[in-house]
Amino acid sequence: MEEGLDYHIELSGHYYSTPYQLVGKEVDVRSTSGTVEIFYQGKRVASHVRSSKPREASTNAAHRPKSHQRYLEWTPTRIIEWAGKVGPFTARLVESIMASKPHPEMGYRSALGTIRLERKYSAERLEAACTRAVRLKLYRFQSVQSMLKSGLDRQLLPELVPPPSPVAHENLRGPDYYAQENPLEVGKC
Image 1 (cartoon, helix red, strand yellow):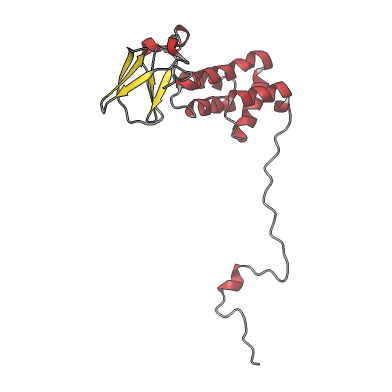
Image 2: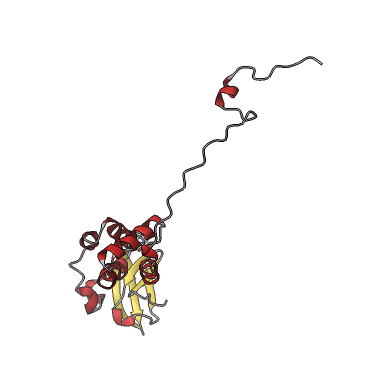
C-alpha cells in the first residue's frame, strides 16, 4: 500500500498515520478486527487501534513532521476565528475547506494559505474573493487565489435573477379553474 501525501494511509475508509519520513514510500499493512499495524521494509513503524469511523483519522503525534507539530495547539475554531478577522465570508470559506477534509488538520495548509493571501492582496480583496467563492460553492484555496490574481474579486457578483412573473393570457387557467366541480360544460351532439 502506498503512503498518502499527508503521512496517513487509508484502510476501509479510515486514515492511520505513519512516520512522516515515509511519505510516498510503499508500506505493508496488517490488520485484525482490533489492530492496524504498518510495516516498512519488514519493520513495524506504526500500530493503531482499529477504527470503523469513516473519513476520520487516527494520528500519532510523533508521526507528524516538526512543521506540523507546531500547529498542534491550533484548533479549527482558532483558525476560523483568525479568518473571521478578515471577514465573515473568509471565515465561512476556511470552515468549509476544513470540513471538506477527512479530518480538519488536512485542511490547515489550505486554510492558512487562504488567510495569508491578505498580505499580498488586502483584507477587502480577500473578503470579496471569499464571498464570491462561497456563493459559487468553490471551497478551494486555488479558486480564491485565482480570483485574486485575475482581478475577478473586483467584479460585481451577478445578482440572482428572480423567477419571471407568470404570463397573463386568456388560455391560461389558474388553480381556481380546477377547483370547480364541473369546469367544462358537456354539450349534446
